[in-house]
Amino acid sequence: MSDLAARTWRAVRRGPPGLRQARDYQRRWFREDLLSSLTIGAMLIPQGLAYAQLVGVRPAAGLYAGVVGMVAYALFGPSRHLIIGPEAGAAILSAAALAPMAAGADAARYASLAALLALLVGGLSLLGGLLKLGALADFLSKPILIGYINGAALIIIGSQLARLFGLERHADTFTGQVHEVATHLRQTHIPTLLLGLGVITLLVLLRRLLPKAPGPLILVVLTTAAGALFQLEHGGIKVVGPLAAEPPTPSLPSLRFDDVRALLPAAFSLALVNYASSVLTGRLYADRFRYRLDSNQEFLGQAAANLANAFSQGFPVTGSDSRTAVNVSMGGRTQLVGVLASGVVLVFALFLTPLLRDLPMVTLGAIVFVAAVYLLQVQAIIDLWRVRRVEAVLACVTMVGVLVLGILQGILVAVALALADLIRRAARPHDAVLGQREGMPGYHDIERAENTETVPGLVIYRFDAPLFFANARHLREQARSLISSAEAPVRWFIIDTSAVFDMDVTAAEGLEKLRREFEDEGVVLGIAEPRAPLRVLLRRTGLLERLGPQNVHATVGAAVHHFLKDAGARHPRAGEPPAPPPVH
Image (cartoon, rainbow, N blue to C red):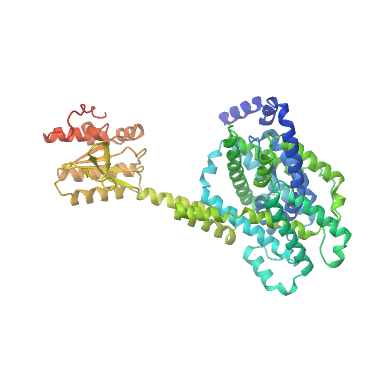
């Protein structure tokens, strides 16, 4: 605990990363940062409204969540380019967590629950940063993230189908939402559907033809003007209506034990997934622009953004891939972009929200729909299939698990399957019998290198994995098989352990059993090229003494030399230098 306190104190003395970046700020960067901030602010306004609606809180909460999140991350986040705020994945996770608790809850109670969820996400992220748990993200491999993204994108698409068809949504699951729309197609409100399809088409065209243009903002302006001019509300198209745009009053969310217990699993999922997706995006641009991204500090940046939202009646936020990509394409250099963009959104939220009264709700649904479609990574799964099919299957299993079981459960199932696959591969690792090839130094796999010869009476067996309980029996079985199938009687059996960096007690007992079996048959068991950790374990388990130090060799070449010397035979390589002494 004292070590944790010491690390915390050192971090406080250094100051937040945002202030350290500000000290090195160059005036020539300001133009690019300003232009980028205007674009980011323009993007966030419609997206914030749409994602707040997806979570189930008042639309203006999405604007203030972006304002607070960007300022907090600018101070404490390590990435110079990552833009924090409302995002589709976090919104759908939040909505899924809050949905079971929404029955009978009024708007104030629901908003308090959303803020409590942000508080829990922020608290868990803070704990992760203080405990240096950045390595946790390594368990979310690329196939799992691809599957998660595809599953979350399909969930988002399903959540907006009813709105696009002008129907009421009652189902909470993806399959239920698709079935609900399919069975009520006759009740489709045609004007709403046509408007939604028109917005989707224009968003796609703008994205392709004018990728730097703020397409969502342009469509919000156009459809709002159309709503006011043609009185779309009277034609049955639902509009946003009056927005309660007053700024939130800073306060602590209601802390009920039952609420905390119910939301904690979802908060853990959000903290982990938000961190993983944000740190991967941050690393991408950190590598491109050649600066170091502190993965543990990313936890603290996420914590700051979510804790700030918890105290301002917001909801969980995270890094936005789309807004971050636009920030980079516009030439943004530092987190000043986030600070200036928050100012743009704040001015709009305080003074200009009445302009959105006639904004059709289907426009927000179409914006979320298009964003979700572009989240889909079908090509990534195809690429995985070409490289390694088991990882493509893992991505598909994650996607299906997220859709059927839920996001957290789907991810946990995928992690468990990935670990099971890792154990399977470690239990049956690659191995090889080694020999020498004329004109090539060293020892090579006899099945992969042509014209490779072994030494009669000697088997050199390479094992390419750590030795542990799951593969100890496999090693013994392979050794027995090689002895019985050898053309000439085997006198020495050497295990090349150059790839063995660890060994557990079960494996040590297995080696000792193999040594005794070989000893009864007149076969010498030896080890070549043991790494330092393995040498320590050989001593601790007593195997070094039982094998005999003379049978533990520094290199494979040394083992061959000692075998030939022991056999009284001439070494096949004339002029080879004397063998190094055995390892003690």
